[in-house]
Image (cartoon, rainbow, N blue to C red; front, top):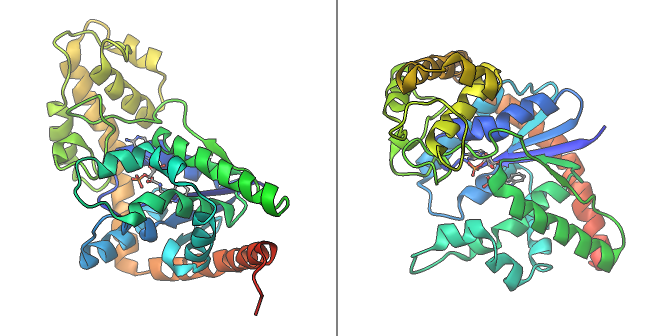
Length: 327
Ligand code: AMP
Ligand code: TRP
């Protein structure tokens, strides 16, 4: 069975972008792959986090995995920090990485732009991400479009290790959705929808109550025309809303265009809000049930145990190949 790994940072409220770009594919892949889905808390601390908020968001993201349909009987769900091998292999791979390649990472450039002091964790972060993936010898990594460059680096580091120390790591492939790989902000279609955007009107959080979702969608920026048409170059805002609609309703873009022909944006946005609410409401209901039951802690413990068994062996093998004196 092919192996799948992915992770989401507990650095804010998860958005519809995380759901469409990443989590929906996690759910799809769990049936016929060996899956590892983490909450990447070690990545979240590459920018300052309030301890209480980090703990709350970590539990929230893990719970959302299950609420979104990831089944702990099929996939390993765990906290990155509960499996020590990630930090350890992260360091070993950091020593194989070059300043130049890390400096080229656009996420690093974006997150460090305009800052006076830039954390070194933020800089070496892609080597830790490579460790996350390579430690399980994952074949496939379901992510949104913004992670493509980090995946490329992971592939380079795997190849570098293999050529220096002998073939060991699987060189992983990204698994990116065709539509929805880049869900854009509701207020600015040139930026991706992001949980770290200070304007909450720019994103739909998975835990936004239905009325908030309706308000945010009705206020979403659109052009001054009235034709509901998929045209990313000339109508980026409407095109973004169309791809959200398509994902949430399971309809093709053409079907939706035909449905709203000659009707203007009002009716389209109103229906879109209901389509999104119909996806989020059951998810939120399951979320509340799981939070109340406290069962996520057991799920995370079991997930980490199974993951650690694989991870520990990889770290041992890697250290042996690199010439460490083993205990
Ligand atoms: P992050 O929230 O940065 O930890 O991202 C977690 C996962 O969600 C990654 O696979 C991202 O590529 C994906 N993702 C985040 N935001 C978006 C978005 N606006 N559109 C599509 N995918 C996204
Ligand atoms: N860097 C990813 C992001 O910002 C999160 C992440 C960390 C990840 N480790 C990973 C994604 C391993 C996929 C696989 O979204």
